[in-house]
Image (tube, rainbow, N blue to C red):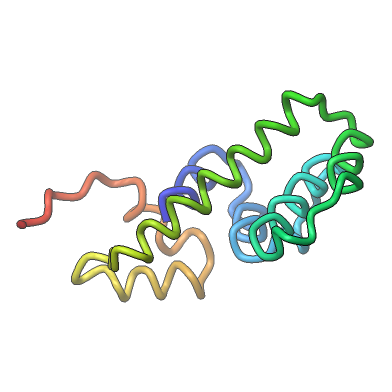
Length: 124
């Protein structure tokens, strides 16, 4: 949810942000950005299928080797953190499930205020 809030906060187009969050393939992206996202999805879902041609595809869009490495590292760290949270049973704080459901199914505007408003600390 934090990533979606950040995207909406820094975008002037809530519909575009929603497309990126929910299904980037429906967004009007430049070829380089689409290639990066396609690569990240493949690395996330089917890492054993990665080939040198996947990296060549990123380079063909103009990415440098440093940018390719950054793409791989960011994807890996994001996946690691998600698996860490899932593996430890991290759950959405009580009372926020409805907002999470709304955020996943409604327009980005619905949850934007909640995402960007500081919340009181949760009792332990």
